[in-house]
Image 1 (tube, rainbow, N blue to C red):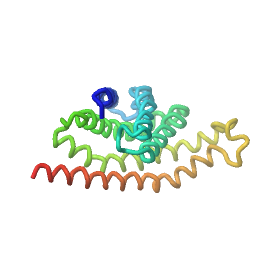
Image 2: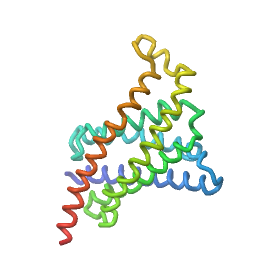
Image 3: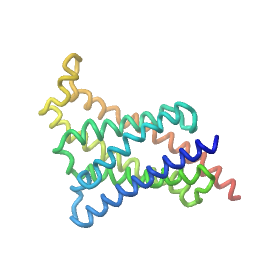
Length: 217
């Protein structure tokens, strides 16, 4: 990989790490100041929407081969999160203050601070062992936390408002199903799609931490 590409990837991952650190700080500051979990979207929602939209670059990175991640899993994660954020949370104000937003944003932010910091430092071979361990361990708790009491619970709560508002009714007018039906199906298949990603991360963990321990020995 050329030095220019390395510098680009270092800059991208560093900026994402900084952005997610700011979002985590805002979420926790809001929680401490108000003693409430209801202000997560107001404090960090716009920033997280921006960071998540920019993360489409990771799909591009995999597609053109400058990172070894491939396209499928980055695309699955990006599309799932982006749909959740932009199509549901951002559009339905009634769900922006529910605890599921705080849970999701906290899990995402902490995960991404660790992940992007690891990627940025690892580009030049400088990721410390403790950060590598966190990168391939914290997901075991944070991913299920973000999924069940976070994303899925919020989507379930949003169904009432989706139906009541006939959300995206014009777009789905010529289709044999509504957006309400679409989200219902998404909720049903979400755990199975997520499980593929979760198992893939365990495979990565065995590979990365196994190699890491071998190097130490």
